[in-house]
Length: 194
Image (cartoon, rainbow, N blue to C red; front, top):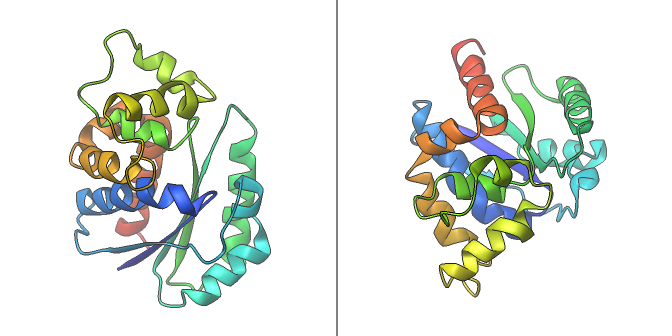
C-alpha cells in the first residue's frame, strides 16, 4: 500500500508526518505501507496545500498511490474543516475508484502530535492549554525542542522527536482524538470498506 501525504510545509512537516503516519498505518494493520511526503509542490501554507490544481498534479504524479492524505494546521481557524470537506469532494472527481483521499487538520498545529507522544513534558504545562493554543509551535513545541537540546537537529528537532513519539502512537491517539484520532478512524473505515 502506498500513502502520499500533502502538507502545508513539506520542508519541515515531512519530519513530523512521515513517522507518525507510518505508525498509524502499522496500528491499522498495514506495517509495510510506503508513506511518502509529496515535496515536489513545495507548498507554503494551507491555501497552497488545498489548491485543486496542485492536488491534481500530486494525484497525477503518484498514479500508483492508494491513499492520499492532506494534512494542514488549523491555526485557530474553526472554518478550516469546511475547506477540507471541499477538498475531499473535489478529490472524488480526480481519483480512480480504487484510490481515496482524506483531509484533516491538526487541532492547532501538527507539532502538537509530537508533544502528545512525549513523556517528559514540563510539569507546569496543562495538556488542554497545549492543545488549545493556536500558536502551539512557538509557545510549546519550540521551547520543548530547546529543552531537549535538539534545535539544531534535522527538521529543527522534528525528526528525532517524531520518531520517538511514533513509538508511543497510542498516547497520541488518546491525547488527540479530534484530529489524528479522527483521521485514524476514517482510514480504518476506508480500509474495511474501500
